[in-house]
Image (cartoon, rainbow, N blue to C red; front, side, top):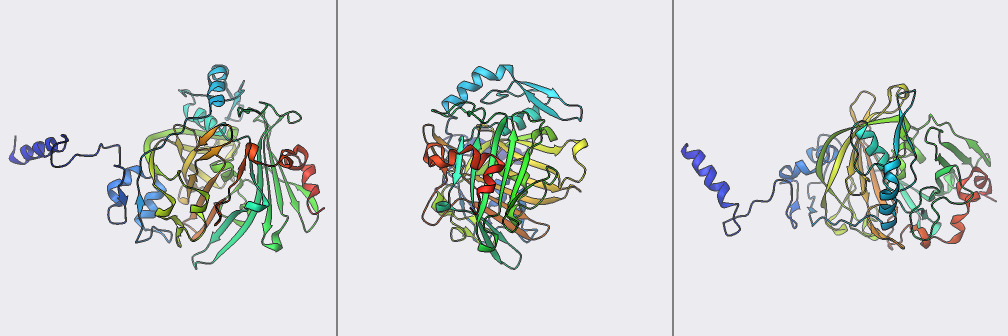
Length: 432
């Protein structure tokens, strides 16, 4: 053994014992209490999604601030709801993947819970995408007028404009929350509905949209829009999944807390597994825009709380070839939480496979009535940085007074109205 090799062995041996000069951190962990800055971030880049590394590298207009601090704390795992796990155990064994003539896949015999708790080949990646689609969410998620959700856009000149919206998301099938029916009476064959309406600015007020997803995934979603200038409802085109939503950097396929595309139109491949830094344990007031952010990037300040490491699958999600023509994204690299199947970060590429948007998803842990604390709670802050156009959008339900979205039993009874919030007839009631 060479002299250099000898001292290398001695050095490695010293750090393996608690009583030695230093204790080496495991290669798959960051010690709680660590502060990540611009001076030391490269030591921890293995724990960062690709887009986060790009922001640290500073190659584009959107980049990390020079005084950045990210404090790392312990990982906090909240068990999935009891009813959701019981449904998984009861029904997962009967779920099957069905091949479609156009090259896509759909799901058969799904009732509730995780459809594929231990996804294996064939179609392992697509099964994970199905788990993401059917991940646990509260059955009712409401942002009322008293707690407006914001879509704030920025450009390269630091001009900022915000749109305030209300929304009602409702799950009509596969429910497992205590005190709810698995299938809402009067709802079949609808599966999930998304209703939203602009409240501010005044010139956009009352613009509203409704998207209806069906239990049969092979049936295209229905899209409706209320146009206040015409005072009428228009039927949308399901092919327009790339249109900017409310003038933001998000598209309709980016909503539903990270992914809103019909999974029959997509394929997914597992390209890795890793640990990534995420921020989940924060309150609504902490995310108030823009005072609690490093501007202009709009990166969370340490006042939000500690970052933590979570285990994720890395998926490469693309439109199937028969559905790919004209679609905006060439691929979507998704970092999917192993515990909850929630997307925690995404990197979006254009049709030429060049990085286009960096999509940070800050899912916020909060207590769901009757269920307990959940990472997938219907509350989150999402950020889309368009590195090609030097534009960005920040979506969140944070308010300076700490008001929150309402979930399940917190929502007033009027939001249970199937006609008003889950069907196109309800859009006709706007402005009346």
